[in-house]
Length: 239
Ligand code: GRF
Image (cartoon, rainbow, N blue to C red; front, top):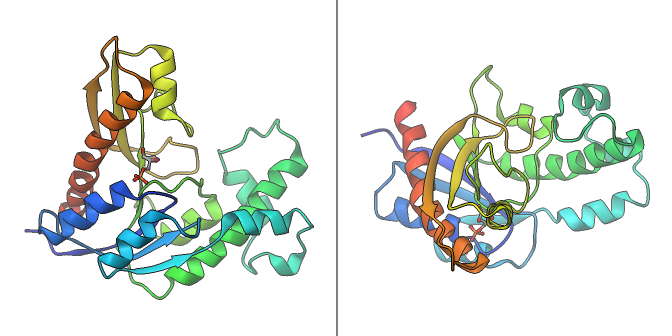
């Protein structure tokens, strides 16, 4: 048996993956304990699920921060340890051919939100951060403050497609629209790109000719709920 690892979780919505992890912890199927659940979105069901399980919760309202940032970002708004040149050089989320002002706005506004997340998380000592349906990308500003040891990844994400196919926000939709006969989900580590980090585990399912997009989503979620706890356990056993 591995020692119990301390896990932090971030969500954006319904939190069915979070629930699967909560249940796996409660049933001693995995050697993990969830210390907190944070959300970028107030009032979502996932926060209720966490509270019901006795887990601390917090919200960093990304939409509000981005809206405020559109009125202008001053040096004082940015984290004191934020260096735009450094983050621009490291990030692989946006093509450098894009408009420079837009890239700067994106990275700065996200770093403001990420600093608030880091402040909320600072109270907890975690071994692993699990993104369970967290619908925001992480910039190198955030990633480097979690991955503090060289070459050790500490942030996991679940993606609704068999990566490297169909990165982005609509994995099941893209799988379905392409006409794939196999769909799947992937748990991977977060690196500086979008859905590009090392793969930890995958599960696949068949897509029948008469399946609808809703069928693909619901069959995929069932696989996600199986896969995420297994990957967390794999991590716990690796420590
Ligand atoms: C999942 O399909 C996950 O792969 C994707 O967003 C969905 C979240 O579902 N990133 P839930 O909030 O865990 O129910």
